[in-house]
Length: 130
Image (cartoon, one colour):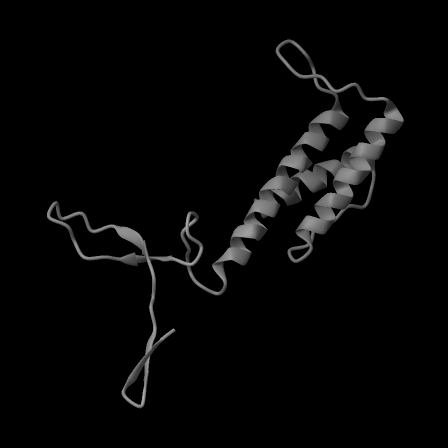
């Protein structure tokens, strides 16, 4: 997606003759700035937003919708990355679980299923679950 964003930013630079850049670490903030610029441009030009069959979208509307879509996807990616909490994967329905290779069932379906990595500690021969 980052490559697509870079290509769209290059086209946007040539169309609007503005100096836009989207960094790898500051993607979300940079795209918010671009969206704010495009919204201001739409208001200044009096762009009428259209939708439906047989309607042609203006240049401002196309770019604004494109970058809003990129921004929404980036926010989703950021949320999912934060949900990993240092792990390689996680289950969407249960963020505390991680996918593990479980025992085969009678149909020989070896699938990854959400499970918990339970750590058990013993202190002075007394079970202390954590």
